[in-house]
Amino acid sequence: MAELNSDSGGGKKGGKVRSKKNGGRVDLTAMVDLAFLLITFFMLTTSLNKPQAMDVAMPDKNKDWNEKEPEIEIADNRSITLLLGSDNKIAWYYGQLASPITPPTVVDYSKEGIRQVLLEKKAQVPKVSGGKDLIVVIRPSDLSVQRNLVDILDEMKITDIKRYMISKIKAEEVEVLKTNGIYNDK
Image (cartoon, rainbow, N blue to C red; front, side):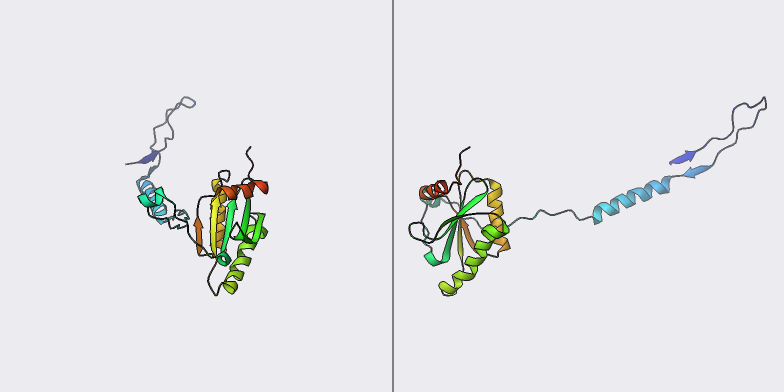
């Protein structure tokens, strides 16, 4: 049992001998029990922050896919391709690279940059493609950082674009990044 003892009296004062008095006794058992009950209560009722993760559908792993990458045909008037370069810059083009509807343009990850482009194309594509929605092809380069990919996936969520894919960058697209100055080997 936990208790608190306090002594009073005792020593010699001026030659008189005093009798030893017992001090007050406080039983601390109830306070210790209450402290543990409060700690347990707060531990059980506190909600921990859950990590926020985005669901990304990934293709199944099979030998045929890894041996030969199939080319996916996308309508020119429905697709916008984002080339993630270095220095937190993006080059984008609308249509196919060989004959783009909108030529490659460099923007950044700001609200006035890529978000504005995605919102404009999201509104424009259903009008020109007969009600079909926009398809975004995301192609990170070797010099883009993981943060850039996370930022562009966040932009897909913010702009509510449902159809997007991540694929490998092609050699001719790396040349586009180099000519626009956003493929800098440092």
